[in-house]
Amino acid sequence: MGYMGFGLQKWIYTMKPRKPFKKGNKKPGYEANEFLNPQEFKPSGTSINDPESLEYKIKLSKKRIAFRHKAGRIYSVLIIAGILGVIVLIYMGISGYMSEFRENHNTVIILNTLEEENAMAVFIESGILHLKNSEIENAINNFKLALSIDPYNKTALYNITLAFSINCEINARNCEETFEYFERLKNLDEESVSEELEVRLVVIEEKIKRRRSE
Image 1 (tube, rainbow, N blue to C red):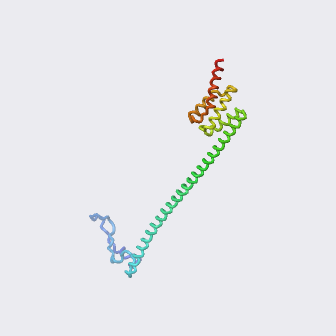
Image 2 (cartoon, rainbow, N blue to C red):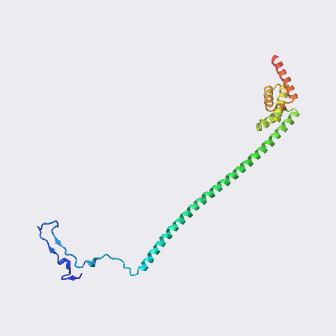
Image 3 (cartoon, rainbow, N blue to C red):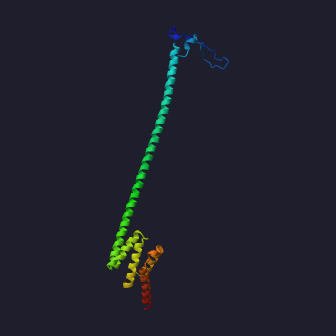
């Protein structure tokens, strides 16, 4: 549209005034004329002169979208595989650690067992040596140490019973312990009780009765 007259556009000075008291729904004022050329107000758009180029662009866009979907799936699979790999490594590490711990624990148990067996053998040998030298109290202490390692050791039970019987006969001590340990040895293995030990207990029992009667 061009400018007409005093710089006013045509649609402005062609407006007709309305009557002030005209009936109708319209409000008082001016009525605008319709545009002379409605074709001038078409929506703007991009004109495409080459349909093949448009089809190529659409295919290219589809390929890009498909590639992105595939890439996203691949990334997801890689992430899941990485997580599973980490879990497997952790599990293998824990399993290896537990196996090593069990082996070390078993080794420690074996070493402790060997040490205890060696210590018990030393205590028994030392007790027998003290018993032969008439060192009764020292012999009893060594046999007690051996029995603290293995309460069911027949050699230690036999020799401590013998040591108690000697101490009871000579010094009137450990008389009750003599019969107590004798019963333990007899219940454990009756064949381990020798005739000499049984005779000694009979003699000790008679001496105890005499002492009580006196």
